Structures are given as structure tokens and as C-alpha cells.
Amino acid sequence: MSYAIIRNENYKMGQLSYIYRHNERKNTNYSNKDINKNSSIKNYSIKSINTSYQKAFNILKEKYNLKGQIKKVSNVMCELIITSDKDFFEKIGEEETRRYFETAYKFVANYQNLGEEFIVSAKVHMDESTPHMHLVYVPVVHTRDKNGNEINKIACSEYWKGKDSYKRLQDNFYAYITKAGFDLERGNTKENTHIPIETLKKVTNYENIKYEIENNEKTDKLDITKNELETQNLSLVVAQNKELVEYNKKLKLYLAKAFTAIQRVTTLQTENTNLRQENIKLKQENHSLKNYIQHTFEVVKNLFDFPIDRLKRLVDNFVKSLNK
Figure 1 (tube, rainbow, N blue to C red):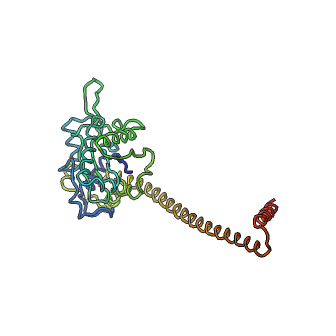
Figure 2: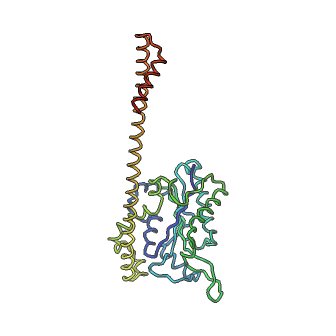
């Protein structure tokens, strides 16, 4: 059975250029070998963008007079990665696949009263083994200031308030997507046991962004465009680079733990296979011994004209006396 998969990631201002280049396919090379650049023409947007995520954020902030203090450590955008598994999409076909992502887009636009205007981009990737959508949005909450006036506020921590916030997201997404006619199961809230390791590495932004962080860290100054330089001063670029170095260290630590877990699973699988083979061999030997003993009883019976049942009892009693 296939699962309804939705995952959220939060990003700071300094990380937006990397996810923009990945999601909108602005890079020349990718470490993820699952990406078939010849098939990138099949990618499509549920909501397209004609500028960078950073500029889009500034435009939205000014246009809707978004409140909230924005610091270097503030999460200013979020990204939902929405997918299922390869078999599910192959089964429903291209037309229903597009309806799946369009339905998911509508769900996000209405979830917690976000508003479609605060969705920056919704890009569907069809150039990898498993179709998936990167939906980037500004976490805006509609609240009131201390004077009671209605305001729109950028507040990631308030948008994802509560320890069960992601569980509620998955519960609501599952209910919404199945009501739309898609035959899927509810994903596991505590573990990703229903998603193969390779699928997670290919689908989630965690693995896809690894290349951009490691390779652009040294060449970031060369990759910044003239338009970006017009809006950023040198001190901001330096601060962003320092932040990305720390992010890279943490990412490498998480990767090391993940690879250790993968190696452990592989070892356990090998041990399990060896035990199964050994069990089969023992069963074969046991069967052979039973046949040998049975033939021995028959030989004794024929040679000495001795009742076979009595012989078996004598042997059983002898074995019991040895065990005592």
C-alpha cells in the first residue's frame, strides 16, 4: 500500500538561494545522480516564480506589510515536500499525478488559513525516479497586535506551534487527499519505516541540498549574480557564509549517523540471510538422520526378527537414561 507523504523544512534567509537553485533547476551539476537533466523539461509549476526566493520574500513583506522581527537566525520561509512512492504514481498515470499535486497545493493554501498569496513557488519534479513537489511558502499567521489591530505576521514558531504540529499536518493532509479520491494510507508519525532509505535520500531536500552547500561554500562569491550584489552588502554575504559553514557541519554529522544506521541494517540483513541458510541445512540433515534411523530399525527387524516398536522403546529408554 502507498502512503500520503508530506514533510516540512524551515529555512533562514541565507539558505534561500540554495533551495531556489535546486528547486527551479538553476544549477549546472547535481550530486544526486537520480536527476535526469534530459527529463527536466517534464517538470512543471503549480505556482511559478520569475525571481529568486529572497526577492520574492522582500516583495511579499512590503506588499502585505508583514510584521515580525527578522533576524539572521530567523526562519523566514518553509518548504513542504509532497510525494508518495513510485508505484503509486505509475498506477494513477500523469493526469491523476498532476491532480494529486494540485489538490495538495489547495490543501496548503488553506491550511491554518495561510492564504495562496503567501505561497512563493510550487514546483513538481518529474525528472527523478519518484515525482514530488517542492512547495515554498512564507509562514504567515493572521493575528492581532497589542492594540487589537489585525495584522499579518511572519512567525514560523507560531505557525508550527505545539509538539504535535507536524502530526496535525499529516493527519489533515491524509484526510484531505483521501477525500479527494486518492487511495493512500496514513504515514507513520514517529518513524519513516514505511519509506525506503533510498527513497528518502532522493525525495527529501536533506540529500538534494547537500551538494549545493558543500560545493557552493567555496565558490559562493563567484555564484552571486549582479542583481544579488545590488541588494546585499559584503557583511551580509560573509554572515551568510559563516552560517552555511555551521549548517554544513551539522549536515555532515547527520549524514554520518544515517550512513552508520544503513551499514547496521545491511549487516543485520546479511546475518539474517546466513541464519536462514543454516536453518535450511540443519533441516536437511535432520531429515537425512531420521531416514537413516528408520532404515536401521528395519534392518535390525529383518536380521533378528525383532519387533520394530519394541526396538524403538528400548532405544528411547536408553537415550532417556543417558540424559539423566
